[in-house]
Image 1 (cartoon, helix red, strand yellow):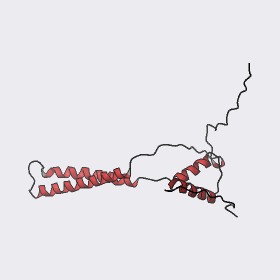
Image 2 (cartoon, one colour; image 1 turned 90 degrees about the vertical axis):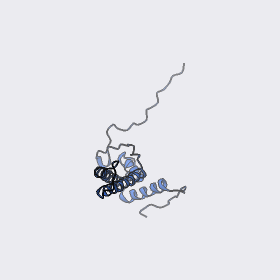
Image 3 (tube, rainbow, N blue to C red; image 1 turned 90 degrees about the horizontal axis):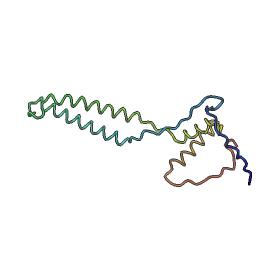
Image 4 (cartoon, rainbow, N blue to C red; image 1 turned 45 degrees about the vertical axis):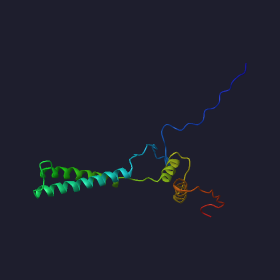
Length: 150
């Protein structure tokens, strides 16, 4: 009968995250909102069209051209609802924020104390990560034989 030896467990990270210089940093990942700007733009255009319809309905009703199916009073609530839709779409479009994925990765590396970067090296790493992440063609590796400060 052979004797088995216990394998050492890999080092597990501490339960409490600690960042640069002992500052507590909680690094959490969450999924981004998946709505598209095209959807918000479509809602904005639809709201503007509804405002135009409401204004035209109000004008035709005020001029006495409206019939019994679309009275003049129906144009005002329609315009109010459409203005609210347009304002909500504009606010939604202005609140969209793009976070640089390269910067997020560098912050996570520093928070987990994997690397300690000064501002110049951090900027170089973010730049390189953005080239890799956002490039529309394949990237070529570059071997640097010198340092940043030489």
